[in-house]
Amino acid sequence: MEMHQIRYVIAAADHLNFTRAAASCDVSQPALTKGIKALERELGSPLFHREGRRILVSEFGRSMLPHLRQIAAEAEAARLLAQNFRLLQDVPVRIGVLASIGHVRFGRFLRAFGAAHEGVELAVTEGKEAELRQALRDDEIDVAVTARLAETEDAFALLPLYSERYVVILPPNHPLGDRDALSLSALGGVAYVDRLACEMRTLVAETCAEQGVELYARFRSEREEWVQAMVLAGLGFAFMPEYSVTLPGLVQRPLVEPSLSREICIASVRGRPFPPPVAALMRTARSFAWPG
Image (cartoon, rainbow, N blue to C red; front, top):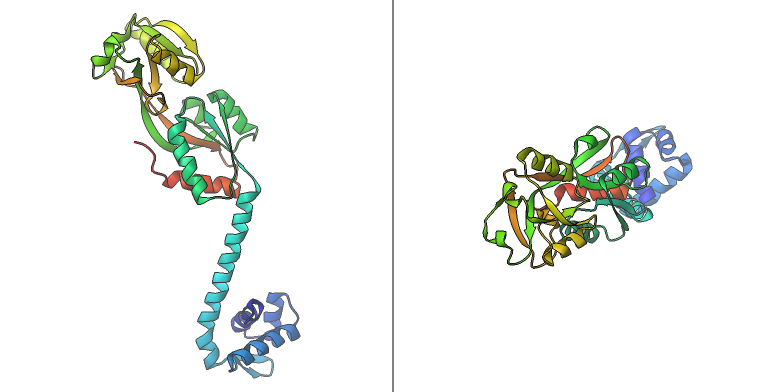
């Protein structure tokens, strides 16, 4: 039993005419007739009754057609699956990630995606918010993992992933470490490590100005690992998103009065179609068990 023979039988049953059936299969009528007769010999009974140019499906043919259609449908599904798998392997997924994103938790998502799509290559680059937006516009990356900001709303489509609070990180044995939570007013005049890459840095500075709180920065850096290392070394405290804290030994306390949080999203250019591997990444992101 050959797949082309099954296609010929289904076409003949749909059209009840060998000429039209042959045209729909893009073969000559003699080739179609020959294929159907070969299948009838293999099955041991005619599938059609022929009345001149008119054909009718036999009783045996009516009993066989559902099975033949199922075989054809499964073969087509297998063909599409193989085609999609090849397409997934053709182009790597280019992901831009905001520098302050917690890479440990995001790495768990990439591990789950890689396990489900072993043939897909991933290219991850790190950048600032403005850099990621420009890279998206210039088609240098496919998607950006970033915080939801007002300026991203119109230009890009956003897929929300999770929300996270901002916390205060402290070195061990810091005098403020015995408190359950820390208000901004309690941090005035305390040695501070300034995270220059923080997308909410301006908001924190404005809030401090409104409340009359002065932050004394003993160290400044755009690199997250340096900020955490300097806090751990005792140079001061820092504000950080809770899922971005990676160094063991750091003390975390919720920031209250005011309480700050951010929403992490996957941003893509609105209206730009996804290649198959990027579409697969987005499907996995929608179903993944994100923190919080």
